Image (cartoon, each protein chain N blue to C red):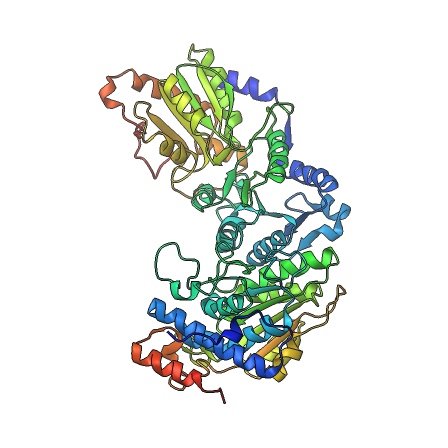
Length: 348
Length: 290
């Protein structure tokens, strides 16, 4: 299986997330005169140097002051501008959290809070520059939308959809950093709040977003060689979540496996369980960062060490399916099970 | 309940002469007291120190229109010291943005429009929800930047408490406003010398206020924050799309101003009010302020 996954992976090109972000921002600025970018001394780091050169008067650089950055964005939005906050997810979601809540969400203004380097995409940056809690925090804020694109193609689609979204509400756009494998269909439909079903199968549904969608697809295709048929659901919008898509999958598969580059507390897996809590019958298992500060390392190796790769997904999928073969009395709604470990505290 | 005299409830002509402003400030304190009586308690000290500032803004300075609360060319006002919201509510009610009936409903039941802190969601004429301190100046910088970009001539006013400027985010915004030369932005510090737990000198000293803001690149004016003859010309800045230094008005005020047993008393930052105290406040306000 390892070779199969490696072979498939090698067939895909990559593109850096921040490069795509900067390119799409320039394209959007051409056709949206009210669009402005605001950054806290991270113009280069968020891929916005090109934008700054092209539209110097529309790039507000406030220095290393994220609270002010987010407040300014809210003020500009209330006067008709369309501000895109270009920062690291770590600082946008935590340093300026109260501004995200009060100034943007409670104030009912549309600000796009683009948080780059999310998850462990800045693997060598260490926990100060990584985020495992941002999705949990942001989705708990009323009137906040949370979008997590999975490759550069979907970054382009998501950012364009965010700009077109009419609601007077902020959007937390959780983005990676460096190269990620390209796999989405650039011509495919994209709608905020609408999950994308990328594979069909009746044994197991693998739910993922962000960088984990590609890994889920690799796992799914490898499992097909073992006669295990998985569906893959890309839930790129964690909030508002696509309840119908989740419920439909839960009704047609034996179990769900949710994979995310985020703490298992409060992230996509938790959001899926919330949808399923009133619909008994489909066991759910979560793969994520198990409430710990990960070791330091290059992004892809680091993800693998945390179990955030196709091989581990496939292995866990097989174990989960084997378990579901046992008497149904052990299967409850959203019940967590462990494969030889406690729920939190150690990777497998 | 004591109500404002009928002539004050009619929409006033602007700008108002000083005598009229004094009367409106008196009404502002009465409205505020009535709101707090409806709730049983309130931030008396913080409201009474800025009654003249709000009155000067809404009855002599701001270009706003109650018939068009969202008029894009209006001047913006941000009540960053959100806990003094009743002074803003009174001004908006007396300018016709909100119905007078809301005074008696203040904080009285679920679903009322007026609460401790201002909300853009529920209150016409409020430009920004506030309450958590240290937010308003950044919002004001954003509003002024948007106006500067589009060469519009609206002005932006932000009222902060002197305790509020303990917040570090205020100084992030201060530096930024100077960088962008936001001449259309005026910030006012209601310098009553108190925060919740005591005087600023006891809790966290911030003097010299003027020198601090000047060092951040602002044009600073210090005035008596209860004197309309000083307040109105200092607030009524030129409409200009051009760049220049943002303006800081340090308004020296008295916490609890206008009520003898509240002036300079820490506990009246926020306190319950008895019926007897209410009657005494109204009796004192019934006479002209010194």
